[in-house]
Image 1 (spheres, rainbow, N blue to C red):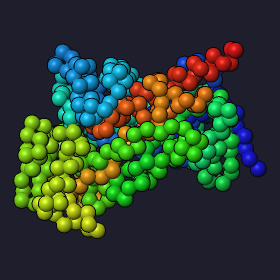
Image 2 (image 1 turned 90 degrees about the vertical axis):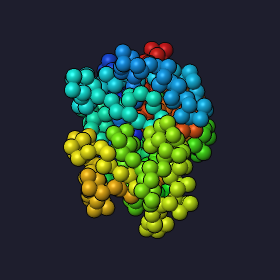
Image 3 (image 1 turned 120 degrees about the horizontal axis):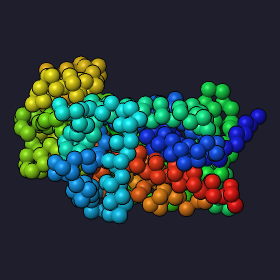
Image 4 (image 1 turned 135 degrees about the vertical axis):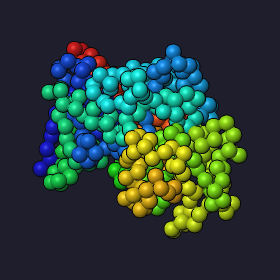
Length: 415
């Protein structure tokens, strides 16, 4: 038997973009719409919880940051392939949403004067990565999920494997899914849908992605004839832990960590004399691979040669306070305490800049269907994403698409 469930809006994916979209749709509808959010895992176990370093936002114009500066950094870091109008909207909206998360209870790190703390990040010319220790994504997901619980008109479905969209005459009709614990096929009928299924990182063998990120939403969209864009732009994060690929946050280098080759040299000085270890990720990754290929790396298992990430300039107390999760990862997965020893790292597949072609408000071209987060391609990041811009993008455009979908459904219901 096939179970048929009837909703006004269905959100596919429970990462930062999906949760934020569901919240905005619920708020915008004022309880008038029935909303479902489905995920192929437990809703609070989306890959977004793996984000460590921060969310970029201009908070301190009184100290020298500005929207123009954030936009310039983003566009320059994109190899000048970002959509500049989208970037302008993004940088202006990011601080609004970071402050909103603050009001919803996220434990942002604090400076000594009590203001929200921000750390330096690669490619940014001002310390604007707003962070919660080195567990930013974890706290963002929990804050959004807790906020979602306030809305009685949102039903949450865990462990639902979406395998097709129902589209007729270029109109979205719903989602086909398998209830993974029982094998039951479910049809989520809906007037509108929001695709927030993330990227496609598990295509790569050495990657920071969790095993959830298999590009399901993009594959379904492609089979359904929707346009995909810029899939050749896949970012490699400089510091994937060898041999697992687990992310070692850019916050380590933001707080003073240094990359060293097998001669003990701080080699980024010759590749990026100004930014050094905090150059944009594509530059750092290419520089690391040059060192490795020219014989200045260390031999690693299964061909995973590496360089070292030296934590010693940070200091033990700061590591314990701001990088406790990274320290636990080093101890647990490679038996090395970063306070005492550098960690072996090499570039790992990390982020999909491309995705579903969408309009500036996330519309896919299929009536009633939007996309947000890493599954979409607004060209915010062009050919390379700056660190800390992704979590901000997911929250900003999750909010946009949730509001757009809710207003559209309310409009057609009146008609």
